[in-house]
Image 1 (cartoon, rainbow, N blue to C red):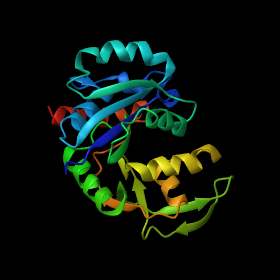
Image 2 (image 1 turned 90 degrees about the vertical axis):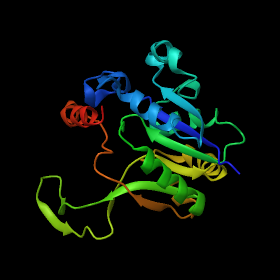
Image 3 (image 1 turned 30 degrees about the vertical axis):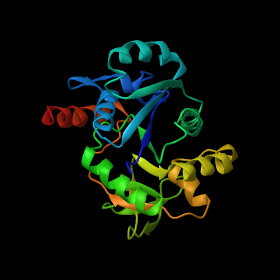
Image 4 (image 1 turned 45 degrees about the vertical axis):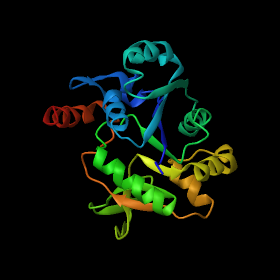
Length: 229
């Protein structure tokens, strides 16, 4: 049986750390930051639809800029995001096809998740129910007080830096959002599943799947984009 995956791309951030600009629509290489993720997910036969969640101010511009490519990029809906990330994902969840086997949630600010990585996360999600890409922590970690004084050195053993796409069996993610999303702000979707007592498994990723957060991230992003043209 073909596994049907719905993809929610979270592109509704305020862009405050980027100077207030709409980060997903910034030019990068031969497209925009958002276009890289759209191309990657649309290229996968497992992807049945893509739901793009954008800031209210970007709704009209997104509809216009993506109109020509909606069919090719499997975009089924362009929806308004919320004040915080989990509200935005919940808005996307409301538009997911009822027959989806898997739901992937991906940050538009990570344009370089490869098709190979996505397939490995899909395989782990099908096996375990929930899977996330991550890279092992390599740096020395220190815990410090508010005054900047080092309090302790923290062991990095078993610590991972989590990325997206995070992929879940559809009903598991729906149940997690129904039960826990209204109860506070969470940093990622896997945490909601963890709160249900369900296991989440890591798929080792790579450092090119970086998140573009500030203007200082753009030179490296441009270099990666250039290398992939």
